[in-house]
Structure formats: structure tokens, C-alpha cells
Length: 303
Image 1 (spheres, rainbow, N blue to C red):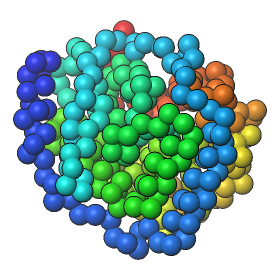
Image 2 (cartoon, rainbow, N blue to C red):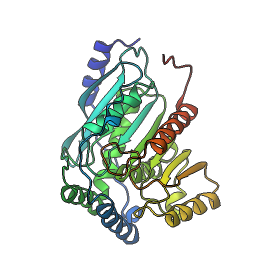
Image 3 (cartoon, helix red, strand yellow):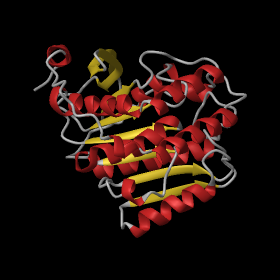
């Protein structure tokens, strides 16, 4: 049985004994066409977020449904450097719970993403909000563009990061099942995580992230997937989402897509100009139902 203090000791003891010999993805998994599509997506996101700031709205202050414990922890080593993430779990957790890898939007692992990770942990999950920007947090669209482009130009590093996160949750935190969830840049990487981890991932949640209709890449997905998109999104267009759906249908994947009329890109981001409360609340409810369906291993008592 875990208690909070003993859980911390187990986690910290495991941090520096992680298996670091993780195999990086093969170069053919990030071919020239995919990288060019990623670069175009950076341009699209720059347009969508051109007038945004990181100032939170009251919607960012929603407290977790149950108390959580959260702290910054190293979860692996990438490119000879420790990587740190925001680790959260319910304060009354006695045994390891299912886990979710949370992937930040284009600003980075900021306070808003940490708050969302805590909120998700309050629903009865171990949550690891990973950092694909190496500790850097953007405060302007120009800085965010530069950070996002750095990942696009070296996706092998981000792939290794995701694999480290999974190994940490399975090996050190003892999670029986693992899902992924991300917004914007992180939504695209939640989809990538489903491709990277294949059979090891149990569920993937994609909020207005970059999608693809490349069936060779999508064929790697075995996890159930749910996606949320805005019909007014000019960066992740309705046409691109429809092509993604058609490819997933041809491959007979387990997926569902929700397109919100009147919603723009980043409709669930409470710090953005496009926040849409109705769409955000509906997508959050559906996300929780989806994760509960595919990650639950028994009754979880959430008051």
C-alpha cells in the first residue's frame, strides 16, 4: 500500500535508476514530407496565436475535484540531460492509478498546463505533464514559434522524451494503464504518442492538434483515440480533419472526432482569445468519459 511519503521515496529512488537506453525513432518515421508538414503547422499556429497572451482568465482557476499532490520531478534523460515534468496524483491515493501523459500547448509547460494536470489528477489519475521545450516557457508568440520549431527540426529528441515519460509511469510510478492528452502543439504530439507507443498506449486525447492522413503513420496506432476540433479553426482546418477521419476509417481504427460549430483554434485554452466555454466544457466532459472507459481498472471513488 502506498502512502504519500513512501510514494515520494519510491518515485525519487526510481528517478535515477531509469533505463536510459531507449531506442530513438528511426529516421524514416519522420520523413521529409512529415517535417515539411510540421513546419507548415508552425506557421499556421503562429497566425492563430498572433494576438494571444498567456494571461489567465477565471476559467483557469477551476480547482481539482479532490485534493492532489503535485511536484516537479525528473522523469528521464534525453540528449544527456535530465528532463523535468509536473507530476500529480490524488492525495488519498493508496495504490498506483492509471496514468495520463499530458503534453503542453505551444507556450510550453506553464502554470496553465500545470493547473490542468492537477485538475485531471483530481479525477483519479496519476498525471505527468511532460516538457518538450527543455525547461523553456514562452511568453510571446515569437518565443513560442521558436520553441515549437526547435522540436519540429529535431523530433527524435521529443520522441525519446515521450518514451522516457511512458517508462517512468509504468516502471517507477507503477501505472497499470497509460493514456495521453494534449492541446494544440501538444494535441499533435498526443497523436504522435499514439504512433510512437503503439500497443503500449491505452488511450489518446487530441485537442485541435495537427493531424495527418498518412496511412503508413496512422497504421501504427492501436489505442482508441478521441479528437476535438473547432469548425472555425484556420490552422487545423476542417478539410484536414476530414481527411484524417477518412484515413482512420479506412484503417478501421477505434476513433471518434467532435467538431464544434463556431469554435476556433484553442477553444479550450482559458488564456487565449478564442476560449469557448461551451465547447471547452463539453470536450472536457467527453475526455473524462473517454479516459474512464479506456483506462479504468476498477472502481475509482471520486467524491
